[in-house]
Length: 197
Image (tube, rainbow, N blue to C red; front, side):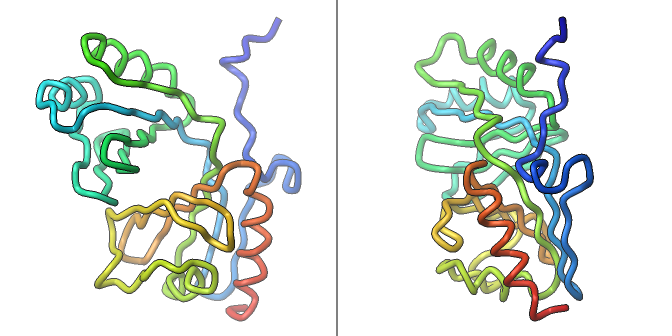
């Protein structure tokens, strides 16, 4: 019998691309589907210093407390989703370990640690015109003075709910749609990139 925990997790675009990497290029722009990261939803009281210290001890990095910010540790990134909610992203396949670490560190606290790894796909869009491309379908002000590296937001991109995270100055953006919207968003990105070919 095969252990389900050892099976590779297929990307949201596997139906179209099979075993090949899902990637598009158009001039200076590239978009590719990333391997499915571990995704742990964490809810807790940001006003409780003991809770914050316990999370830091469990994860090895602090939670971002400023709205729409991220913090990157050695092997994880934590995105602020709301006043008492964060998304912990880890290397693919590490979700069980992250859940165990957090539940162990937070056993004395009223909080929630939920594995949501299967919930979202992750696309990475990069290249100088990436902001202009996203502006075609997203109402956020993505000007560098308003949205830069380390910032994140829950928003809509062409009516699909996504978590948008700017990774670096290139600029590189991670777009995390729910898996059920992944193909729709992928096809929109493909169409929106056509002018850069």
